[in-house]
Length: 312
Picture 1: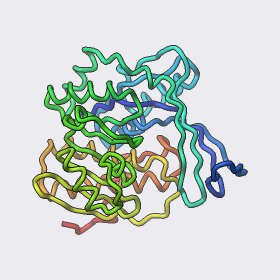
Picture 2: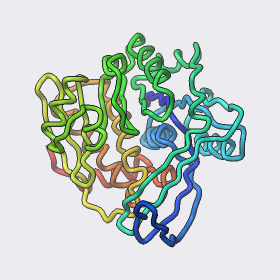
Picture 3: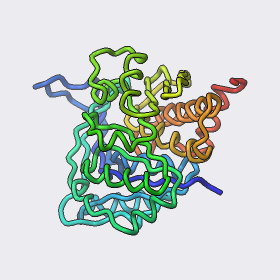
Picture 4: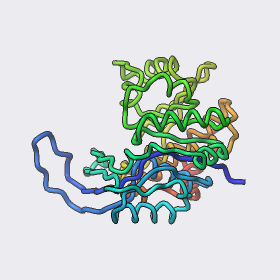
């Protein structure tokens, strides 16, 4: 039986332009191709989880505009359950994204309807209770994130928080997190640490949560928990095209692998989950776009096997 993952989060329409380089403050750069792509961290991670093989339900909101229709159809077309997706008056969330020739990007988000995700109810709680993993981010109101995590804790559902966009988090949320997923910038913000040393960041974060996954971009990912387990896995070597949704692919796949393993935590299972998530992120970065680039399970498995075959 497939693992069940619930995502409470954002849905945005990404307005993406390619550019020879990212503009500096006050600078205008002549760009290249322009496209619109369904995105948002929550929606991306829901699609990533569904394509990675989970039964995934999404709880969020879109506006009553054309973007909202497009976002709903995109989620449903990717196999994500949308009973928890509200339509509210006003505009849908929008992300403005520029991608340069080295696949680096900057992103500015206008939350729109995502700010209306404040009315989680009994049906949402039942959906969370039926899942192995609840996956959260920080693009909807923080009070909603806390409420969803609190429900998950009460129902025995594992809470995975991707602390993005980076923010200082209240103790009431940190106390409910089972697994924190952050990149190095997010880790420094959450931990309030000045050091960029991954080991220092992990130490600081373990004072706040019991388990941490630190993504390291092209270097892979690291893990640490309060039992003393620490490990690091390398990422597949690829030629990146667009890294916009690579972190979402990683996080969605990690949630699926964690759910499939029933929360069993050992050096072997954690390493296996990290390698598979790294393969998902790398497979995503080989294609342009956000949700359109999120890989199917077969593509994740293929890159995983090609990279890590024979790894214990």
